[in-house]
Amino acid sequence: MKSVALQNKRTSVLLKSLTLLLVFAFSMSSFSQEMDLARQKEGRKLFRSLCASCHKLDKKLVGPALGGVEERRENSWLKSWIKNNAEFQKVNAEAAEAALYSTSAMNAFPQLTDVNIDDILYYTTVGEIKKVPAAGETTIGGNVVVDGGAPSWVIYFLAAAIIVAFLMIASLLKQVNELKGKKKPEIQSNFKRDLQELWAGVKKNTFLKAL
Image (cartoon, rainbow, N blue to C red):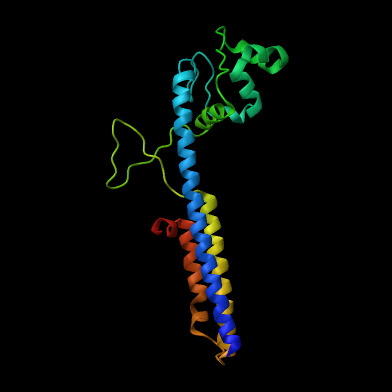
């Protein structure tokens, strides 16, 4: 009986740990989404006030299109260029070559911090985050609605945690029932089916929507 009580205690600890893990994962996901939204908004504001007269995200204007610019240039290079491209051209051959793109010299922005520039570059990467309005949602003046879906890493992290928890709980229950003299607990007969249903939900991303 002591062994059974010990196994029950372990099961209880496991369930509590899993609950805390899920709460932590959802909290981090929510915090991450809020931070990304704040960066997108700040970057959009700075881009429109400082860059939009010469640049667009998706097509050339006075200067080149800036959508996905971090895929073409390193972050440190872009910061030096944005803060003072004239001085940067004196010490960097690629910067001097880039200046030949247009006869109009680019303004310097020494007042921008690294965080400001990172926000602008983040906006050039993600652009306008759009979502088709769901039932009950509306758009005002064409403003977009930001997608609040969970990031893919959260989906797979939670799926893995739940599957591991299922396996551990099933193992513990099997041991408990064996100690009680039961060879085939009923829960074992449904375990494979439950895992299959869980994995199907993960692939369709339905279980997180329900949460």
